Every structure is written in C-alpha cells, then in structure tokens.
Image (tube, rainbow, N blue to C red):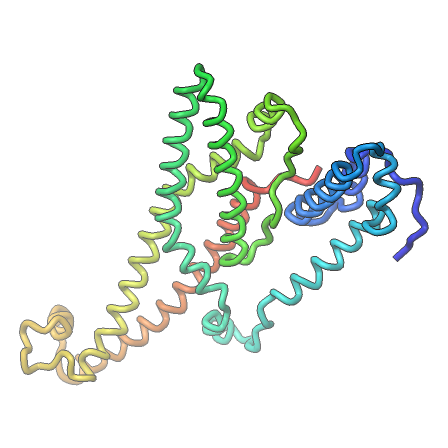
Length: 311
C-alpha cells in the first residue's frame, strides 16, 4: 500500500468526502459501513480532545487510522476476503440436470424459502408499525409530546431497517449495511428532526415496509401451496407403499380415491403412484429454484430501498 500521502483533509466532512470518492464504484452497503466507521472514530477522537481542531485531530489519528485512500483500500481488501469466505462452494455439476438438482446443496435456497414463509409475519408487523406510528406522529404533532414520539418512531424505523437488512443478507445472500447511517450526537434537536424528515432513505424504508405486506402475502401463498403439493405428490405413493393407505379400507382411502378419480387401477395405478413420486421430487427441486430466484430479486429490491446510495 502506498503510504506517501497527500496533505490530509482539514475537516471531518472533507475527510468523508474524500473517503466516499476513494470508494467510488464499491458496493453502496460497503460505502455506508466505511463512512459510519470513519465518522464515528473521528468524532470520538474529537470528543476526547476538546481543545483540538478537526484538522489537528485528523493529522493526529492519520498515522493509525489512515488517509482516505488507505482506508478505502483496507475496506476493499477486507470485503473481498469476507465475501470469498461467505461465498457458497462452487457447484460440482455442470450439466443442466446437475445444476437443476444441485440447488439442494445450496444452503441459500433453504434460507430464501424460509424468508418467503417468514415474509408474511414481518409484512404484517411492518404494516402495523407504519400505520400506528404514522397515525400517532401526525395526530400528536401539534402537541409538545408529539416531538419525542416522532423521534422515537423514526428511530425504531431506522433500527428495523438495519435489522431487516441483516436478515436479507443472512437468508438471501445480498450484501447489506452492517452499520446505520451516522447521526451526530452533538446536533441540536431540531437539526436531528429535520434530518429525519429530509433523509430519502427514511421514506424509501417506509415504502419497503408497506410493500412487505402484499409481497409477504404473495410469497406465503405461493410457497405454502407449492410445499403442500410437494408433500401431497410425494406422500401419495409413500403412503400406499408403506401400508399407511391400503385397499383394505379402500374406498375411503385418500390414496385410492386419487387413483380412482382417474379411472385407473392395478398396474396403471402403480404407474400413477410412481409418476406422482417423480413429479413431487421434480416439483420440490423446482420450488427451491423458484425460492432462490425470487429471493435474489427481493434482495435487490431491499438494497435499492434500504441502502443509502454512494454519492
């Protein structure tokens, strides 16, 4: 790494601007994390050295923390190592059938499937939070007590935005921020309130939370239906072959009712059971592919609405 540094920035804002510029082209989530860490570190040093100017603080810590271009390089290197460690093993199968069945070895397929089922619960929770929070905030905004309620509500939304991002990254594999947007603790109350209302990510987070209800309903309906079909088509022959459903209690057996519905019995019935098993297995792998695909698209939506763009 080149340590021959140009003159250091003289203000924290200038330092962050140069760090943002040095990280140009990097993942927006990485940029948010790097800016948060840098600003938090520099402002902590400012609070511990109240008699020094910003320029003196930056020059003092530059040797240990680094110039903006050096910090950017460190973050890029660390990110590359972390992503390499977290990346699923490369599939060993290269044929179309191998790729189709290989989805079962990708743990993110199951994470995406679980997220699809969980989305209904989180969607109802987010929608309720927005409905109640906005109603209280608007209704009490004319009173003094409304100010702390507004701040509390927006603070909860920011915390849940970060938590949702961590959930999306863990289950869907899309890189999300691990740090929130930095809020200067020394800002005046009105400055903080203004920042909450003028932050575009705050309002896009509201849009995301509202979208989670219809998306959660759709995800839950689709995948509960698919899982029920998989269990039915696979369970149909297994129940017949293991004796859980036998012709002994024939006409009321749900297995044989399915067979008789198509007017088949005997050898044709056995073939129908085998076909049911094969179709159920194919549908199971297809469901995992669908979950992974929808999960990837949902992760892109979450990234677009929850992550501050790198400017």
